[in-house]
Each structure stands twice: as C-alpha cells, then as structure tokens.
Length: 129
Image: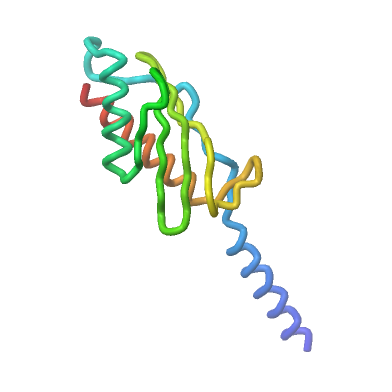
C-alpha cells in the first residue's frame, strides 16, 4: 500500500512541476549597440531592430522616435515588448501579454525564449552595420 501512495505522490508532484512553466519576466536592459563600424546612425539601429523582429515573425511598429513596439502572436498567445533604443543602447521590456500566465513578475517560460531569440537576432543585425 505504501508503494502505491508513494507512486501517487511522485506522479502528482511531476504533473504539478510540468504545469508550473513560468519564469521571471526576462528583460534586456541597456544592451550596448555593437557594430563592425563606427559610421552608423540611430536610423541604422532602428532598421536593424525592425528587420530582426520581422525575420522572426514579430510585428514591429514605431510608437515614437526611439521606441519600437514588437508584437508576437503564437497560436492563442500574444506578447508585446517595448524596445527603446538610441545610437548606443537598446532594451527589450515587457509591455503586455495574452494567455501567458503573467502575474506581475512571472510569465510562461516560452516568453523568455522568444525574447532571447529576438535579442540574438538584433545583435546579429547590428553586427552587420
């Protein structure tokens, strides 16, 4: 009887852990703009960010000078990020989400991967300037 109880506890624990797929909200703060040349403009940074996002399926919109809002829709999930930028730095900051279990500090673990891939794509585009 003890073996069955132990197995049930292990099964419930495993199922609970699988369901708890949330992480702290991943943020890129003041990442340096690293390029292969010194002859680039804020517009070049903007274009690199826009191209990086679009290449990964993000909808990228200029909200105002120095701020891009990126939106990613995956199945029934949506995430939005603010991407403030200037000639020297950029950030990727949580803005909004739907069906991502955001609780004010934690969010579904897929968010982290999506933002990390966006960050890597931005860095790749910037390195080509």
